[in-house]
Amino acid sequence: MEPAYSKPVITQLCPNLTELLPTYIFRDLRLRFTEMIQTSQYEVLSLRLNGLSCAEQTLVIEETKKAVRVIREHADACKAWLSGVNRARSDELHQIREGRKRVIKEWLETEGWKPEIDYHTWWKISKHRAIKDSRPLTARIWIRVRPILTEYMSEMRTIRMEETLYNSRRRILLQAWTDFLGEPASFPNTDVDVLPHVADVARFKPFDDIIKSPAHVVVERDTFLPAFVALPNLVRNWRRQVDQQLATIITSGYPKEYVPAGDIRQLATSVFVCNACEQLFFWIDAVAHNCNLDFPKGSSKERNDSFKEQVARIAHYSFGSSPWSPKFRSSTALAIHVIRSCCQDPRTATLAHMDKTSAPFYCIACHPDGKIVMHWRKGLEHNHLHNNRDQAFEGNKSRLQSHLLSGRPPRTYRCLLCRRSVGAGKLLRNMTCHIEEQHGISILNVLEGIHYVKEIDSIPDPVTLSWETWSEQNPYL
Image 1: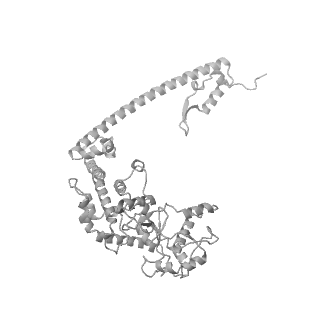
Image 2: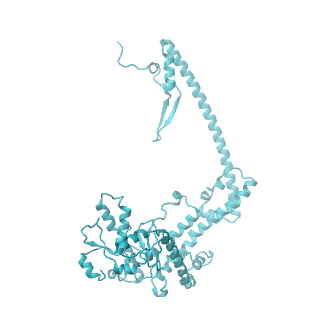
Image 3: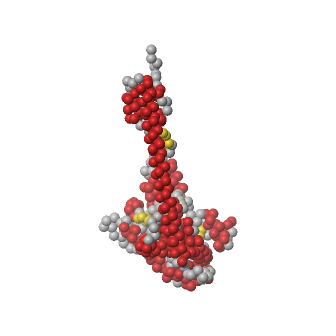
């Protein structure tokens, strides 16, 4: 009788198969290494042993072990030779690279770039591809590399000046600008309803010249006074450019053969949506909005920023914001739909006219009983949120309702005791602290509607009223 299971002949003669066959190192996705043999070689050896006597099989096994041992010794010798060659080549390249770095560093210090080397460290500067290259620094290569190094070190100098000198001057300007906004009488011109953000003010030429004046110039708060004298004209020019950019966005969203009448800034169809926070704005709120949600987060090592992005990031952290940019899209089509539902002509309907004549709205999806009604502006915003989130929250109305009523991002407020400016919104706690510190009013005496209002106060909140109550409060209905 034969046993139900018996080991293969090869395993019986040599339990350790790695002594008989060449092995291969396999690495899986988890970086685990496994020593394996090739199945075809195993089958060839099995066929060779079939039909042989035990003595002949033992002889074949010993010859195979000897052949595999010779192959492995030769492979080890090849690996040692290759390792020595690679090590010698690596040492040679390292010497060339270090010699190149030494020559370049001496030249940079001679050219006056030592402050940048000390500030950024030579370890960081030497990572530039023109410095860490392993090719010998010949005369032809040196002629080509010097302009590249000069441009690179100029950028390093700019970054050093931004971080060590210009940042402190920007903080002085920030405090001066905050005090300036807290004194409305200091800017009596009423033709500009929204002042720019301090990040925009810092880019105006009179202010920029002071910030980037030589290092030996002492800059204090009074140093910016001559620049503030020229501020009215600078602000008017800035506002004119902002209005032109917003007008371009609105006109690009008009349907074909649509010709509006009147001032485009006063029309009810001039509605914007921020590309980052997805909030809906009318003209004046779009001017005052400066969204930071689209500003990239994380360290510069993770992003690999360009030179311009690094400089912009330094200024952003100085002021807490970036200069105003038209990162909006038009929502005119939705506004036309809502205005027509009020039996008004969207070509001529202005905001003031819609506020007087429009009927109340209620959402049949969120409040089918009609007890919670909305101003037409809130209805427009509510419709915008529904259009953006219906697919994401389909079949989950309670979650959709909470998103629509709670609002996103969190509500911010602006100070009524200061001139309105871009990005002036603050959380409620920060706003009360601002009023106490800047205007000397106790937190206990701060009142909404007197000292502060919602930053976007052109979109009223929904109210719980019946149709009769709404009609009594709105005689135009």
